[in-house]
Image (cartoon, rainbow, N blue to C red; front, side, top):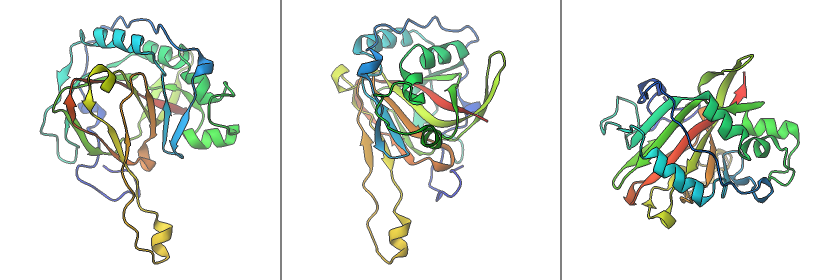
Length: 265
């Protein structure tokens, strides 16, 4: 279903996680995260306040190329073109697995943790701890262990939808009850690698305060995030999620690693 307080659109949401493709219980032997740019060369860019944040060059082009080669060996399964009632149309090849160790590596062995938590003062978002918690939806404790790999080939796409928030448990001693608040998408390909199309497009809602004042304004222009190799895209989901889509890939292949930011419940 659409998030609360959202006008229903059709299709309204991404397919539920329980309907996603389940991978073999054998965990992949993920390649190392090397090479990476030094943390001080990276920063958060707030594209739309409170809604969309990016990290350019989060992964280097060489690391992305290594991962595309590795991910091509995984048993990806094509999602059906005809979704269940109420689900968005999504046609892509995907692999999904619960891998807490990989999620922790992606969180702690890259610059992501320090950028999100504000450890790096040059990280791009100048805010105090209270404002930081308000932005991310609470105390960020890591990434969703549910790791999803997406490949979009020519003609494949993800129609307009909202991303739901989910309650999860991050394993550990002790385990951490958490909920997801922001989607994390890591793009491994772009026009530089031959992938044309596939932009992630957001559809902002009209400013209701201006409408209340009698101003009949046209709907805001869609905001398209172009693919960049190694770009990390974060966008708020759940009740405050913006309607968005993954445009059709026109040439080449679009590869994405997906997880979510998690906050303590």
